[in-house]
Image (cartoon, rainbow, N blue to C red; front, side, top):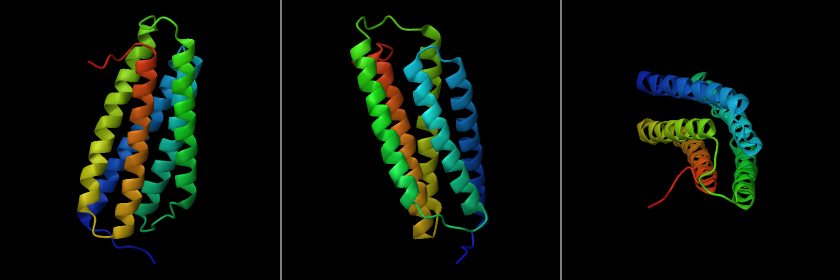
Length: 164
């Protein structure tokens, strides 16, 4: 059964669509620019997930609530991949702080982007009337947070991010 979106809900989804398009573009571009193979892999994985998010938002905009069953499995698989990439980075980086400055800039930008996008989803979740739509948006937000965590873990393992 198609859902009827209010004008505000449509506007929020259009904003999220723009955010997802930006994430897909940035992750794709940054994967091509990254020097470290693990970072390239991480960015390519996130680009594919962001494309899934974009597809989901487009479905919502035409009034269809997608099933999140398949995407949850893919999100968990990607979460495992990002943890593996973070663990590999920790074992291969013997001298912390000896990292590519350009890769660090890419990571900082994407971490900042993920923080912003996750916050935008947080606001959107509270603005939707339909519980199923809220659950879909909450699922996407959780994946955005996982992306941020993966980038943080990579940065920390490379000495790019020092927790005080």
